[in-house]
Length: 437
Ligand SMILES: [Fe+2]
Image 1 (cartoon, rainbow, N blue to C red):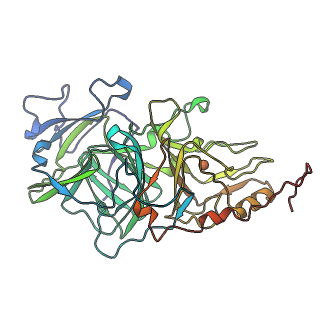
Image 2 (image 1 turned 180 degrees about the vertical axis):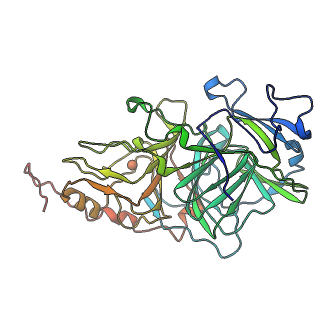
Image 3 (image 1 turned 90 degrees about the vertical axis):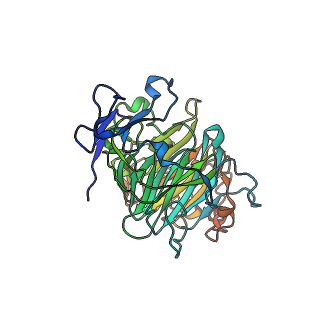
């Protein structure tokens, strides 16, 4: 089945899955059509400035108070929340991991989340966590919402169907999906076992970065973001709702599906985006610009230009710069960089950084092309070259990313990653020409 979407980023959408279900000219009529309940979902304080004010009105079979009973604690031991300090004994360093393997036993999206790093403080609504997920089963009658932050999902293997209370989103590798804080959903792997990455954003909602002198077009364009039309089910059978709240998990039993929103309107809603529709802008004469030119989404921190999180991609693109070391330069950074690879090769690391893998270059820890990458790029003939069939990405945050015990003790940790720079030669020999032998 093909699902329908509405184009635009942060629009004031309206959608109904039964004719006349959406009240017109008012939000809360005395008796809504079809006997529905009207309910507001606030994604910003009531008094947020107009441009940042986000809320939606949901018209549903039962109000959300009926979608929770008494809560009891639930256990998702590999899903960690910041602050999560002193979780392991490993020293600082540049780290890289091979892909997580999908377990043999039945694992759904929630129990398949494994936190790699946490940053900032969820209780202070700043920072993030970087997770990988692996799953092989449907959540069936389980549902979830996250009070701690929104979830940016980056699939790497297999498609996912997110059945949310505001509509259905399907994504495959190469696309992303954002699930706002508080929105109820369940996840169905579409075509077998799945793996991917999740950025849990405790801070300000992701928005589009300013383009500055680039102007009104390119990078991620508003119309390419897709929000689902309303979809509901009337399912009267035992279901569960799991809630993540201040780093802890709770579950409640209900006797029906909470996915019962027949119509809604507003600007607080889930969305998807195909990363192939990102229009990259880059150097057309010389030098390698900062990777911020590839920012798809940004979560502002309140300090201008200092993001809580930037979601940056490294998509297929032409390299044409003259007299330029074309791969990313050597770098030390106040921001902390968590990278993943959806498919292909990353230009600074031809080997070792594999699809599904992860690298972490934390605050002020040096990184850059490996020895063979440097050798190749410093001797390459600089004809136009297309970097094709590649898609890497970065969750970059102003906060240091603290490793979890799971990440520190993972058998997938590449203990020899640091050796990728071992063979970088001293080229300085006192002459202006240097030693490029
Ligand atoms: Fe960097």
